[in-house]
Length: 299
Length: 278
Image (cartoon, rainbow over all chains, first blue to last red; front, side, top):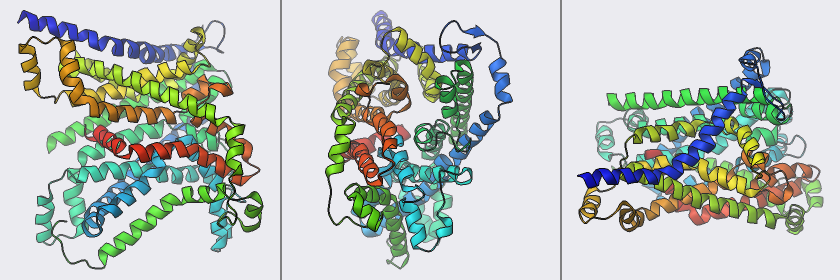
């Protein structure tokens, strides 16, 4: 007995390097970021304590609100739309393609949709801004060819279409992830329920809605959580494609804080934006995890 | 679904729709590919959609030399490989204490790693930047290696802990009765059984690190230290005058990722789904 207690003590040593390093680098940095958000600082010299001033300024900063509005629009493009489209595509692949046409085609489909996921986001951004370029870009070339010249717009160059263009690209990127997760989720389901409903004459869509989706709640909550977190953190594509513009048309919190850290050198102000973003993400993540637990408990 | 009804017209419609979708999804890569090989004169004459008559590979050599791509590849490989090794080692040791050692306060440790996972890099970047400057690690690839080596342990610890809590108790009990020390149990029992999972995790860390952008952007200003992803993002803007050169640059930029994916496809898919279902 005494030996066992002794041993469980020694296990702490194994956690020490990881926990200590993580606490210093991540915990320490985050704490320092919060501290900076109460200061006025240009990055050199001594920070000047100004209390809540940065946060009060944020409330009156139009760009701050716009950036969060865009972050929530990205939740639609990166989380909600890809989740529901992905769910539908996964079920179609699993129920029709794998059953009637074999695994080779189903693998081909999954891999084709997954390809955008493997490329680094900034590189994807370069590819898309090239395709969207107004005069020689492939998208406008096609639109002109099929007689829709009036739709051949300067997609990223005007405020009214810049956000839309980024959102379409995000859907293209995200579908692969959701499809892969849902196909693997479908393969763990017991086919019995589905077969019984089929014998009772339920249509495919009824079975999808009433039988398949509820059984995929665990995957659904993981996908919604990870993609929502990713949507609020978007930085690379905005940096590469639009720089937050034109005007503030594609401004997002991550880029907005970066801009203040390294361009205007209002470090404390940038730190306040980053702190607000971190708080929203944490609250959202805890909320979604709670929801997941409640859904899990009622079933 | 396994009740096979006769194949009506429905499945063919679904097949057609999904193949159409897959082709749209692959189209950007196809269009980058054909234009990367197209001479600029042909682009001006026949446009972006035409296949090249004459396949021109000179742009790759030019771009490769211009950005010193060999150096960028070497930097990215070194950073990603070392991050994978450091992060897997640290995550494994911590997860071992949590999942096998069942140390007191393990839920708190795990909760801390979970919450930290949602903290955006923006809320860490300025302190990391000041820290790197004080420690003389600014503009050194070691800053990136240390930062991602440690930051990745959040996800790694969470994943490995949930795998290790389901580790068969009988094996551990038998070893403990035989008087095996925690270190001995780690080396002779847990590590051999967990090796495939650790490999999956290392592959994921490698690719995540390869694709990182914000922190390298801030930490590595000089050309000589930059990664593939970073140099792609900041140099291709110079090629706006020649669309085919831009296509070649994009193609070179995502080629390494496509090659890794083809090599590690199965491993990676296992990792993604492992993370989701825990």
